[in-house]
Image (cartoon, rainbow, N blue to C red; front, side):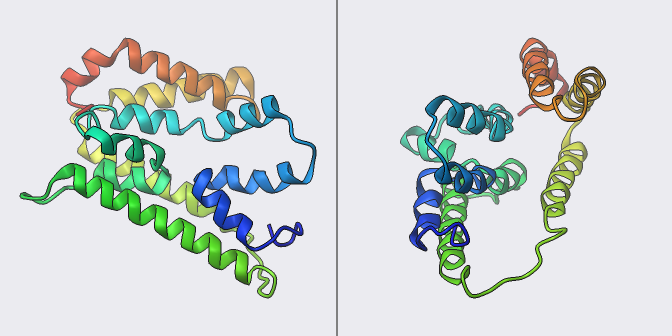
Amino acid sequence: MTAAGNPFWYPTLTSIVIYGGSLEFLVVSMLAGPFNLLQTFLVAVMVQARHLFYGLAMLEKYKGAGHRKWYLIYTLTDETFSINCSADIPDGIDQYSFWEYVSRLDHIYWMTGCTIGGLLGQIIHFNTEGLDFVMTSMFTVILLNQLLKEKSHISAWIGAAASLACLLIFGRDSFLIPAMAVIVLMLTVFRKPIERSGDLS
C-alpha cells in the first residue's frame, strides 16, 4: 500500500472492511486503476472461494451461536478456521464463547499487523521470497490433523479425486474453481453417508 503511494491508514481500513488477506493484496492494484464493480466482485469470489468450504465445515458448529453467528461467519479466515475447526475445547468452557474469542483475537491481530505494516512499510524493506510456502504448510497441517480425527476419509477422497480430475481436464491455471464446484456438489449429494461415517460433526 505504501509503495503504491497510499496513506498508511489504508491497510488499517481494508483490514476492517475486507478481512481477507489474499484479497487485500489485490486491492492495491484495484485502487490504482478505474473501479469496475463486476470485475471486483468476480475477483473477490474467485480469490476467497475457499471460504465457502470453511462455511460448510462450520455450518453445524455455528448453528446455535445466536447473534454471535454473524461475526463468527465474517471472521472465518484461514487461521480462525484452522483453530476453531480442530481445537479440543476443555470441559466447562462455552464453545461459542471460545470460538468468538478466537475470532476476535485473530481480527485484532490482523488489524494491528496491518496498521504496523502501514506505518513501517516505507522505512523497512526485505526480501519476502519463499514466505508464500507458509500458507501451503498451514493447509497441509490442517489436512493431516483432520485425517487423524476422521473415522473414515470419504470427504478427503472426494476432494482429492475432484481436484485431480479437474486438474487433468482444465489444466493447472484453471482447475481450482471447477474443482471447488465439484467438491461442493459431491459433499452436498453424499452428506448423509459422510455424516454416518463420522467425518462430519
